[in-house]
Image (tube, rainbow, N blue to C red; front, side, top):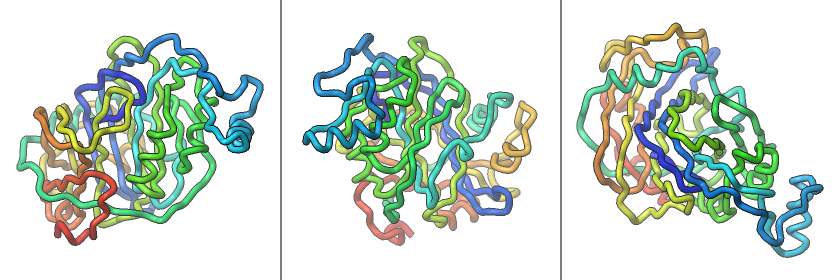
Length: 311
């Protein structure tokens, strides 16, 4: 799974979701790793009408609003992935755990899961609209941009190193704002021209919906807004953290930091998907997870039916 902001080859994706305790608080966890290669054209020049190089990125927003237009990134030679999070609170660098010394943790989980039954009817959820400042920070090969508001996220790309700055169209962010209203968005920017297995990304967040785990699995590697009506080729493994004594036991190869021990599951169930399927996200009801069941539901974003539609 993945949605890239310019043409890319993204393969062998591992997704891990679960519930954990983070310093006494109940949180949800999303682990993500793939092999990424940017195919973004280079170089790309500044498009006509973009903000001048001396403008502050938020001042550019104001100026564009007065002119009746939309700001453009200063340049767009990089690439990025975009991930939505059903989080109750804003997210930033504190929500991304250091895995630089434990690069096999998600591989160990992927190698543990065994094929199980596939999906049934899906569910969608909405959340309150909450906004806060955009945050920009580095993690491994990525420069990460986190925020809520499409205009602010779009403008904040001026803070991303030029080589990694993706050719993001505001239409992409506006689509995500419609599909995932009020959810924080993470834009993971990269620029490698050779296929590289990225370091694992491990996020934690306070869930807006404690009764379900969410795994973002929309697909689009062209740089365009995902087509929700097309079938896509799946190439990913999804694992769900299970209660003690349920599922397969994970034997981690690396020494785990305190943060990783706190968040990573000891027992998992999951499946590997290598076929065509609908373009949709995965959801797992916590009642099923607590019973030791791997029973995914799939949903195209933006439908927002009641959660009990799949119970």
